[in-house]
Length: 123
Image 1 (cartoon, rainbow, N blue to C red):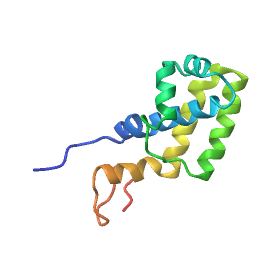
Image 2: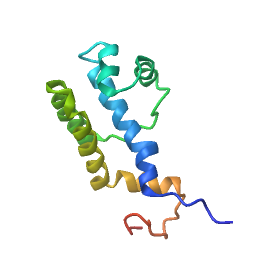
Image 3: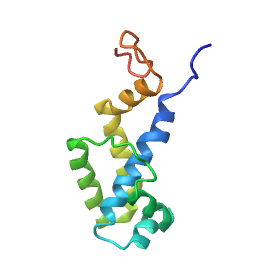
């Protein structure tokens, strides 16, 4: 029986975007009340609480470089929360460029070292 077909975009939806939303929420919560963060993020205050308690988006996929980029994004969002969508897209694109999506994809699909990733064609 063959493994379930998983598309790289599903990895973004299941892992990358939740991690980005969590990181942005937690950084915003350092400067704003939880209720305001929830409003900006378009989620409930309970969702922010779950991020804080590690009940959502548990995987740590940000490296030092991505943490610096996150700081830039949060500053832009604090200046104007209409920047949220653009900043999430920017961070997601950086994750793709850094190969983070590919690493998660390889793990989720349980690719052997000799197999090429169907997303980036790298071993």
